[in-house]
Image (tube, rainbow over all chains, first blue to last red; front, side, top):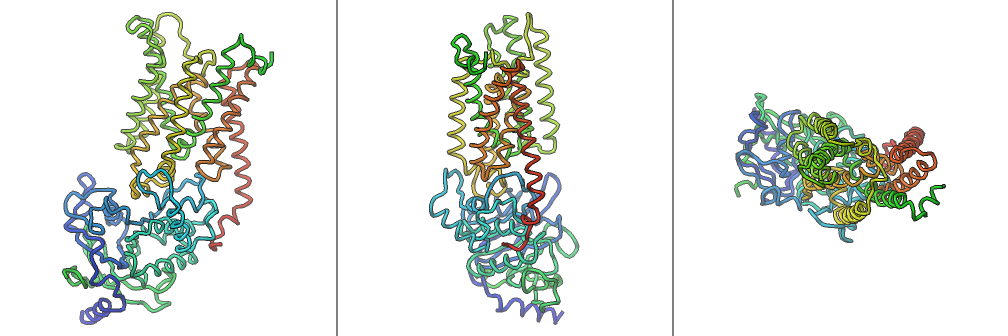
Length: 278
Length: 291
């Protein structure tokens, strides 16, 4: 236990100070949600600071996707309060970039990479894209390291390339909060390296939330680890866990670089988070 | 008499009407068909088009029985089209588990109701004209309505292009950008419903759905984006419609069927070419090196 406490201390204190003392970007307070009579989330409370790189992890079926849908305003909680960038989720969408898992894709849809990325600048019922939108889309292509693909048909890309194009699409809106759902699923090593390099450049400037079912390791960019479900296997709660750096070679070749191991036996109470309650 | 001579002969106005209907319907088939194809709602459009027979049968029955004298079949068709589109829209959005069952039920029940009403209609009513189209039935009023609807569809597609493109490509993402995807879906269904009613005089209820998918599907093989797909599908549709009319005139075959067979043959040919091209270029396209 003592060793764990030491590890927690080293994980909490400096080394990854992004977000500390900053305003809250995402706040869930006593949130519950059910599909019909099937409770999915019960009394979920957590927060993420602006500029933090957070990982929302948990096994399949634990409620990650539901949390994501609530955060994106695609579903409403049965009870509790959700704030995204200081506002209710549906009013914060303009400042939010979302990278879906992209399970469904119609290969017969004729569209180029540049057109997909441009879509990120779409605002409600706007009838066309402005010059600024197109410039932002070009900048996002560079930022996500996919500029060389801009004129290629989207359907001709590999799965990893498509995922990075969707990251560019999310970045085109110059978001304050970037949410990525399973960004490395079925991704080749080259694309994974490029993706985390791009995400690393956002670190500290943009709040990043990565949702993943990998419960053992997270990227070494990660400041906060939020686990869905608790140690008894009961679904529906979110717990903040500590993580420690893993020496290169000890973790599988993930995240295109260094990784951190999640300490599931070490819980960090929300009030212990730096900046919270300040 | 050749098709060109018939087209220019003042004594044969129905040939000119059919030609104009072919050109005007091409815009609807091309633009609306592209949206239907990329949104993958051809099945829904098929259910609406087939349910229309119920309204036609009901209007013929009420008119012949003197219950609603002079009620035109197009009025019943429009009522059934809008009603079935509304039902399908609500079911698709609210009860996804039973979506297929309900849509197929609307498809089959609508047609059956039409057949029953036509069977009980006094006098002679030929359901074949409505099922497979009859260019003799195309009136000047139909052409005006087609022109108005084509203009509205083009204007709508122009104004809401980003919303249509985004909601068809990735509906969930579109919603996160503030696009009212449900409204886009219901609007497309409503326009499909009205278009089907006007287009069925040209190719018939059964074949409307073929013309909403085949030219757009063929165009999708060559187009680089949705806008290009709409333009190319409209051009292809015009070629198929006019070519099919000419062919049916020369061979004395039903025009609607000839138009659809021509469209289908080109679509199948294009699909074969596409498969060959994809097979030969796959290693290059799948290269995962980011280059």
